[in-house]
Image 1 (cartoon, helix red, strand yellow):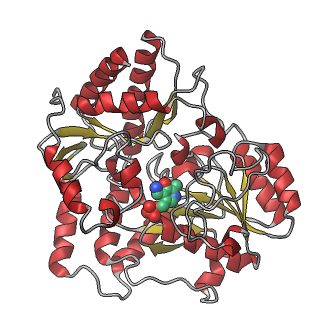
Image 2: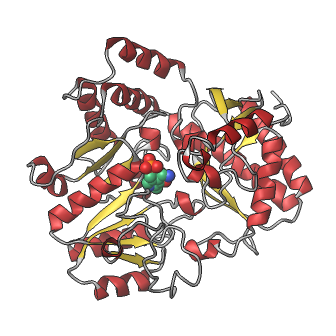
Image 3: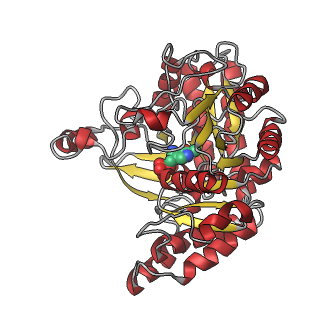
Length: 442
Ligand code: PMP
């Protein structure tokens, strides 16, 4: 079971050189360059099985990037492959209503406490857009309150203040809304109110300042994109209470947490039911599908056809089948529990290795998704700005030492590790061993 040490990656380098000639920047998503970390080029993966993947040079890795959590059953899962192969033979899409989408919506309503009606889309960004449209349509208001550092996709609507640096981020308690990219119109930015996470006083002040203007409050209940920063005890309940009192739609972005932190996602884990929730990643088991789902009253204008939402590819039989197989699997007794236990074993191994080497860090999150954050004194992060003071160089060194030992993780310190349902004892042993060695040379 021991993973081969990382050999050469010359073929990856050659593919990246070649890609520069035809792909803008050599990549298909901006995050694939940040995901190279300190490396000058990305690795090209060509195959996978279970929790292991192989690159174009033949190096093998235990995979905790896991397609950003999408490949929740691991790669090339036999049951999923068989179901998808059957769909390939009968037609992948017709652009019409189809039966798997109905079964899938029923299953989501069954698994998720706050899901009474569902709509499908193709990516997290799109489904967030759908949820925001529904909230604006329902309330007749236009402003959205989001939290600094939380990520809700690349669309104009909310690619705002997901990664601002000082001084553009503005004062802590009332941050500026900072567009993540040129090309996002000022008028859209004006409709976004930004709040620091886990701060009740700042939240109430901003809600008061924008009384009657807010359609929705949106958050990542576990902030996957801020190194799995956890909600302070009672904070999600506070969001629920304030939104209810003020007639604001509460949206949980469960793109990362959904169906991974348990069959009912974060809302079941924390016992807080939002009006709407957004799903993708683990939902599709590796194929592009997303959903927004919520309580009947908020979804009603959409159900009536007053609020519009479309998409040629929405819930195609191929993707709906992939999701159906994945969710049925995750809904079996003990499956998400085992994911959590596997992750907790890794978290403990990292804590032990760090403790033995007297390296301060916070290993935070839950078993299914977690991150190692090199804070100065090892305390967990509470909100985005804490992350700006962590030791990124040490994170990159840690990640690189793991990579050399065949452990593949997200290179971006603000992201996190995702654990597969099919990770084996062998995979976990190899990872723990690599972690111990890595801390030995940090
Ligand atoms: N929300 C969250 C919490 C995410 O992590 C992501 C993607 N990393 C998105 C939304 C956007 O999803 P997609 O990349 O599928 O558009």
